[in-house]
Image (cartoon, rainbow, N blue to C red; front, side, top):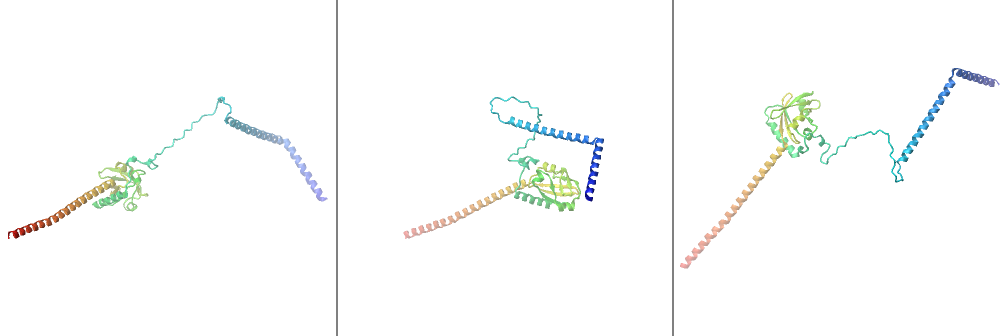
Length: 293
């Protein structure tokens, strides 16, 4: 009984508090404000639903208009109020069968591009070594064989690391390249990468260096190179001339030996004929003597 009385008193107190709170809300007007807000939210939801329904209907109408007509009568033109925007896409470059992605970066015409053979490259290096050995100045020097990235595109010339560490500065420095005629070209030497970048392009294009050419770099001063060019094409032409001369000499020697052999054989054939004539003369003389007797 005590528990029931306790619960009843608690519920009565709770109800009384709820009623007091409602009165306070009515006095402040909070209940009316909450109702108005709930009505606004409902109206917004209804408007969104109506907009979605209209969009679906418009799509259905568009689909219906796009369907093929069964009637043969011409359709009335429907005016469109859409903005016409010209989207000009970049035209794709057509690649020819002969050219490639590497050929598009060439600084010289494709007709002038050459591909040296291993024999031409080796012969150019040999002649460059001879030229290097004939240098009497005693200055440090090295030989560099040209490849396509040195003379046709990219134009980055890497130098021997050991030579750069021993004779060249480790920082970025301007360097002079002097050819055999004395004309000078400024180039940029990057010590960290041990190579020539800026200015080397002008030197290679002006001298029309090709793949397989061998260059002798002689360090005349601290930042000045004397450059000697050995053409691979010239070396191959020299080889052809020397080979032709050797072939002609061999042909002449063989012809001379053949003529000598023929002369010897003719002399040998002449000797027995003379002996035969002498024998016949002696025989005829003996016959005559016997007849006289």
